[in-house]
Image (cartoon, rainbow, N blue to C red; front, side, top):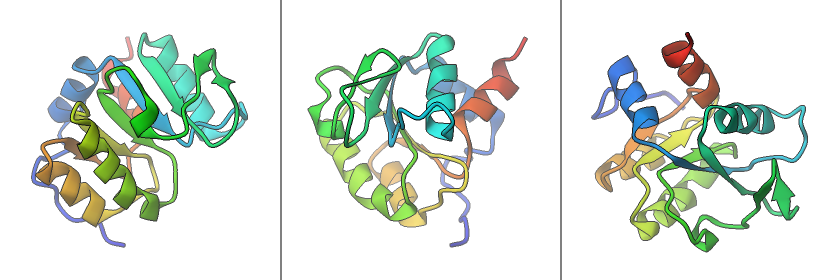
Length: 145
């Protein structure tokens, strides 16, 4: 699938930086308990930077010291960003769940994940959408001292 130019240019460092600066709670969809998996390494990094991570995973009760939820809808606290580590087709349902919540400001599909339809819907729903970028890589690049 080819990446289309987004309405908001999420290749713009200023936009990416604003996402991180306005974000506190990050729901990580597909957060594996396996420390060798990218989702776990990214979540651990974001947690070490002061973000509250909220794991979404089909099994486990606790990952990285945080309560695990099965769906985005189950999370009782505010969610600023959804960070997805699942197959691209899953983003279609996830963007609808994010819209239903009403509090998600950023919809992020991890490096290697592209779903232009879900991306466009997220933007249409008022979220800043990013795809095919890693939150850890981008955060380190923009905030490393």
